[in-house]
Image (cartoon, rainbow, N blue to C red; front, side):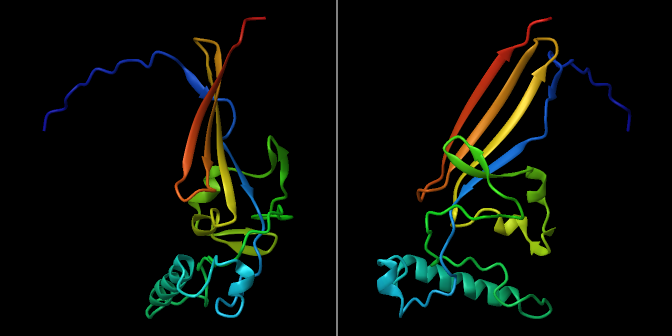
Length: 185
């Protein structure tokens, strides 16, 4: 093989991250995950009645979990199974993923750095967490990602915000840019 030289065009602007990316999550608490679908159906207002979509999804998830835990694998019973029939209470939990909520526009949100979501194991407050599978669940109402950049040559600071509304069956995403010219002092 003969080496081939490629021309490299310089990137026009030197752009740097001003801070690490930040993820904020708005969530509510859920009721006990031990809801008995047949006996507690009236208190759930039809949400998880026998034969409902959520009840069938719950059974399917439990079946998948049982298959995942067959030999040669081993795992804790009920680990990683979403409890679809836990009803949201509307209250903000005291902690999530070992963090307390912080005041943000529109209510309290839980801050996190996105790189923890790449990990399959996270230990906080003595609790074993699985960010890949547990960070977004049925109590998640909104996830907001903030990224900040600065262009040296253009002297422009940019904050990119991507917001995901998780309250509807279809996730809605909105993107916004806030750009500020930073003048020389």
